[in-house]
Amino acid sequence: MGELSERDVAVLELEGRQWRTAGAKERAVREELGLSGTRYYQLLNALLDRPEALAHAPVLVNRLRRVRAARRAAR
Image 1 (cartoon, rainbow, N blue to C red):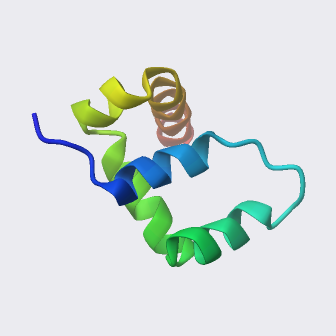
Image 2: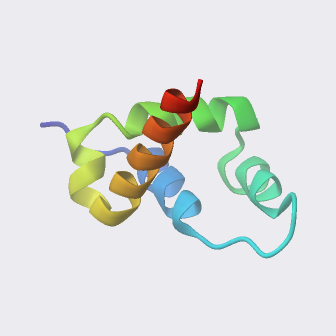
């Protein structure tokens, strides 16, 4: 098992935050991580499949995996 990079940890931490206003998360992604929204979600989706991410933030990763599975099943 490899280690998570600083960027990987930052993505997980940002995803775990609660957002009060529309657009706040997207703004934080751009300002804090320097990523486009599309790239952010690509990285996040790839992280959900990594055992290192699950070990780092099990509650968050499992919740996001369930959401992802539900969206795929709805298609």
